[in-house]
Length: 101
Image 1 (cartoon, rainbow, N blue to C red):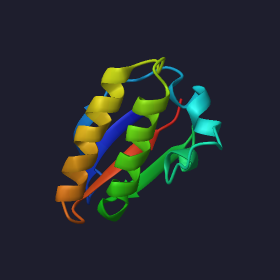
Image 2 (image 1 turned 45 degrees about the vertical axis):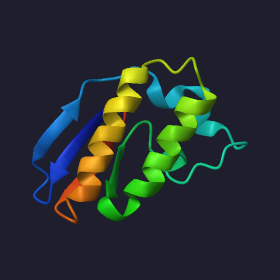
Image 3 (image 1 turned 120 degrees about the vertical axis):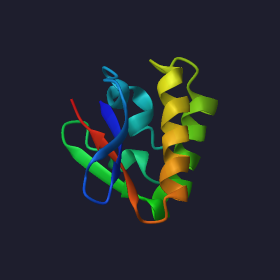
Image 4 (image 1 turned 30 degrees about the horizontal axis):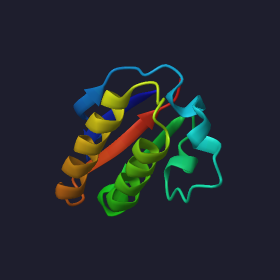
């Protein structure tokens, strides 16, 4: 799973290196938690979120951190949250894009 912060022309502004198996971790299919967006990330394709969706994505990242202590890469969650904040502050000029494995 790769994560990129992109501008409105789909040009890469920032990226996170490949995280193997991130979306195959059990939280991605855990219906006991009320995910707003993470359950829509395609583990094999491209998923794009805009600035209006960042509060929901930040909510989901917090749920993962609080409920799954064995997440493959906690640093990924931290950096993803930072990128989501940048996207939110970009007000329509930035997008957060997940690229599946």
